[in-house]
Length: 246
Ligand code: ATP
Image (cartoon, rainbow, N blue to C red; front, top):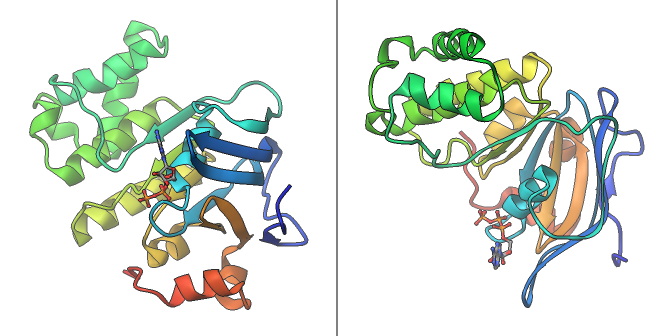
């Protein structure tokens, strides 16, 4: 049991039906406890940003939500298992064309052939990459690769999109492009959970904020309250810290 629970809103920030709940979830890697006794309820349509210092457990929490990490406690799905896609800071691209990278991802998810081509082209057009469809994906710029990763995620039509510092290595222009894509994906009704070191970005994109400190979920609040309410000292200190705001 945790020493004390997170500072949480009395009414849930949930916007839809329950999707996934973590109850007393703990993740250990050998001697390291990456997450401690996490309680988190995620509803469909939410936009949750995870913030916290390096090593606080953000990536591990994303992986746990994905279902790819051994844990103690419960990870409960509500209804049919959701389709989940995770996008990383540096997207993984095969040495294939942009279009082939997309089609392959769709093939691996069992999307039939003609549908694959249609969805891949629509996704490329949506992210503004239609003109580079025949280029090798590995030759795209960092910003273009991240847009391609989001196109791939979008084409897979996930219920839950997990983003691990999706703009960390991008210049301001590319960052804006990726943010606006994330916004459009969320507007499509996809539940989005993202980690970020950029509080301005969290404020722009999220409706709910969770602050992790050494593996504990210390604060879990709607975004306006996170930035306006008095927070526990560690979180307040973090907010005043050296984090990026733009
Ligand atoms: P950052 O902001 O630096 O990305 P984070 O908040 O995402 O950090 P995690 O990557 O989740 O933090 O790591 C949480 C803790 O778990 C850290 O102490 C990390 O070293 C440890 N950890 C994470 N993955 C592993 C692993 N596969 N094996 C051992 N330790 C791990």
